[in-house]
Each structure stands twice: as C-alpha cells, then as structure tokens.
Image (cartoon, rainbow over all chains, first blue to last red; front, side, top):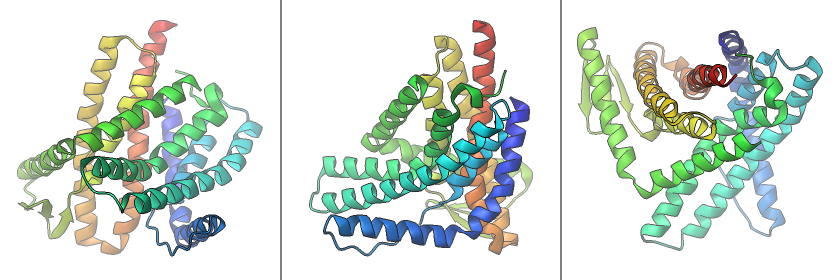
Length: 147
Length: 155
C-alpha cells in the first residue's frame, strides 16, 4: 500500500507541472465545448470558468501508472479511455453548474438557496472524486495494491 | 461497482447535508481559524485573525470552506461508509481520519501562507497541488491503511 502511494505521489507531482502548463488552453477548450453544447440547445452563452482542470487528469494518470498490480496494457488502456472521459465529466459539470444557476436565478427562498449550494458544492468537488472513481471503475480490483 | 455506487451516494448525501445545514461550514471555518492560530503560538509565528481572514507571517489568507478539511473529510467518510467494515472499526477510522485531515489542513494552510509571503509567484501552483493532488493522496493513505487492516482481518 505504502509503495503504491509513494508511486502515486511521485507520478502526480511529476504530472502537476505539465498539467499547470496546459491549464489555460484546456479550460479554453472546455469553455468552447460548453458554449457549443448550449448553442446546440439554442441557448446563447458567454462563459468564463475558473477550474483547476486538468489537475484531475494528472491525478488519474498518476493513479493508473502507480497501479503496477494491473497489467501494463490495461493501465495504458485506462489512461487512454480516462483522459477524454474526464474532459467529458468536466464539460458536463460546467453545463450542469451554469444551467442550474440560470434556472435558479428566477427563484428565491430557502429551498432555492439549498439547491444552489448543493449544485455549487457538487460542481466544486466533482474533480476530486471523478479521477479516483474512474480509476476504480476502469482498473477495478486489479488497480488496488495488495495489502 | 457496488463500492463506487455506495461511495457516490454517501458523498451526495453528505453534500446535501452540508447545503441543508450551512452552520457546519461556518463552524468548520471558525474552528480552522482558531486551530491554525493556536498552532502558530508555540511555533512563534505571528498570526492574527481578522474576520474570516488570517494574517500569518506577512501573508493574508481568507479562510473559506475549501480551506477547511470539510470536503476531504466528506470524501474519506463516504469511502469508509461505502467499504464493508465492522461498525466500531468504521467509527474509529472516521474519527482518526478527521483528526489526521485536520492536522494536515493546518500544515497545508501554514505552507500556503509561507509560500504567499516568501514566493508569491509559486502560490498558484502550490495551492492547486496541495489542494487537489496531495490532499487526495492523504485521503488515499488514510483509507488504504484503514481498509487494508480490515481486509486482513476478513481474510
């Protein structure tokens, strides 16, 4: 377990710098995709996002590369499947957040505040749980280090 | 997959509870401010609480929900609830996890304050790295050690 975690921390630290370097273009791509999604639904939008993406992608790749109990082919397949999936998750997260905010802007009161706060915290924490959840889903038991 | 479904359900219920009781976040912010301030006393680091902000060693940090260990704790607790374990072992893990995450968070905020005071251009990177990558690593360490011990018992 400890060896796995050391490998994960080393990989995620090494990947943090390139992730930070591509943060601007990655988020621009996310905004463009979200704007296009809204345009498809006939909604004009001008969005600005301030996420920590693609840090979750870095975390996910680090988890996959650290999972040496899984065969290399499976790990790389997980990496290649996971990267576009995490982009899609971030995109859905933005669409959901913006859509709900627009929807809730017409309402006031305790329940609207509760829903708004729930939507906000969900959006904020999705990047946290998306990477490890996808790792569990794609590598399953084979990704877990032997205790 | 079963574990993942239970984990996501527990996480969503936790978020719903946080939204329904905003006092929890308020309490977490106040407790974070006070615990960081108390930690700086024996370390002889100048620290002052101004509203919801901290002035530490020349740096000014506003403490918001993300600066508290509340989200990391929620993630750890969701994983512990989703994992099949004995009731008292789960309760012990949740309590120990909360304490470790609280201590980690104090260290995280102190590191951030020093980076902001001494190397402000590195602040953005260190903030994002500590917030997401290292915090996830710490949550993973606690959960893996806790789950491994329970798995050994079941084997």
